Length: 216
Image 1 (cartoon, rainbow, N blue to C red):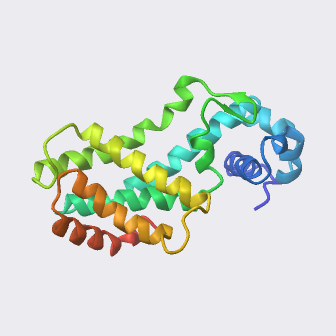
Image 2: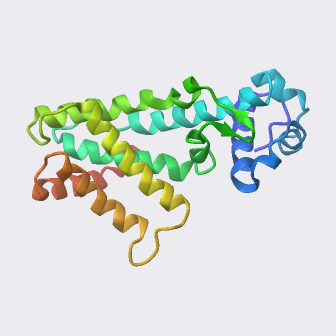
């Protein structure tokens, strides 16, 4: 897609282009001149839409989490909250695989391409964890998870899934421990670690796989 004309998609296109350049070529590729060449626009576009390169980097982080939120909110509530939890894990992974250029930017730490993120920027996406915490609370209320702090369970789920996704994107998960195979086992393990029984956890994880269309 080429945003040569002024369209409502121009801002989003610049975010995608910048994230792709950062992922494929590193920080050196991230310049207003290069972005303008890729987008077919003037160098002023970055300043018009974002106020400068720092604003663009910040917007990449925000856009990445907005897309994650879209995936997570696609998971509906059913009578099986553990299956819902497993599907939230699938949604998290699905977002990362659909936005491989943005995912590393979302967790880029203190600095991206030489542009410093504030503490507020780095913690911006925590609102997405509310989806997981609410589901954890439902799992506890149903007696499937042990009583505890839903927010802590959400963090455990996030940490475990983020670790797998990071290794998958780095192509570290290979035969016989492929990302697909390890992920299915991990989902069951996460539910059991939260207090579910292995038998019911396996059933719920399998049921969640049949609902992938909800987050595809």
